[in-house]
Length: 392
Image (cartoon, rainbow, N blue to C red; front, side, top):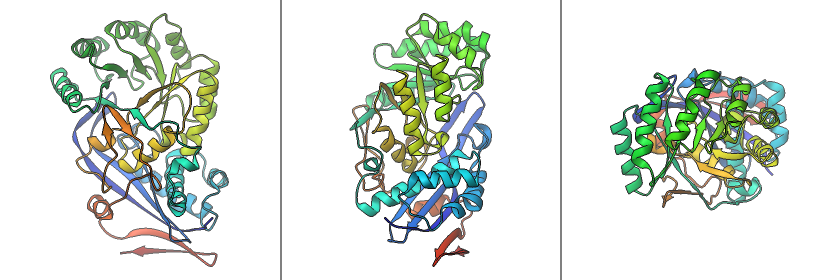
């Protein structure tokens, strides 16, 4: 193994190709905290963390993620063996409560570095690959029926996607149901339809309109109520319908997973590496799902190809019933930060084979989108001493 030598962090901002509308706002730019880790062996690994719409999705933001990493997480792990992942997670937990996104970015960079140092794909450090590819969903989030249908038709013709998630919750429920019904009717027989309400409804609203969405042909409904409203989620799961209810914001930790399973409050768990606190902890949440006969779905925080590839590697190792993934983030961005994106073929994402996550970060592209446009903050360890400096 090899000890951790240094970290660098930066925030980058990348515009989206079109507005991405959700119940809590419209995204026209996605921001990321990028982490570069270097080991004493010379191996370099990369990680990232993104929240959808900055701090509007949860308590963390790119700025708070960077602060937590620089001020607490780096000092906690610097100089330790990079491959002792569980030990490093425990050290980060002791230095900084919560901050799952920040911890995820650090762990992601270290897994990439260790895998590259051994010349193997990252999934080999996570239990081995069970899936060669996964069905890839696309989100329809323009809020306009004609634009959404045009986008869906184009994605079908390109053989990229035949699972479409529709973002709703910003308008009156009856308006959202009408939009979903029109799109579902037009795509019937050609694609599967899922819906994400992003916590916009209360329990009674959900009980009133979820059956209408099911009648429209929706296969999966994601987080229709607030993350705390487990009773409402359980009441929806108990409804006699073919449509499945998926938890997203309600499930971060393995303890959340156990509580939802115990209360029969979800048919499917949306897994996201950042919200679970890293790739290893994503596997722990997935293990609860498998034990409770709950399906899983590979979610996204609209990551670049770096974060998407890391997610793909851990999703590739998971057993149990799955409903594909939505690692489409790179396609929503005007540009990426890697030399070549992952392959999408016949409606499925092909899992890259490494080394590391199987994508190569392009540092010129990182510089192009770097918010600071100047030096990076770095922390190095030299013979047990930590020094901070600005690199140009």
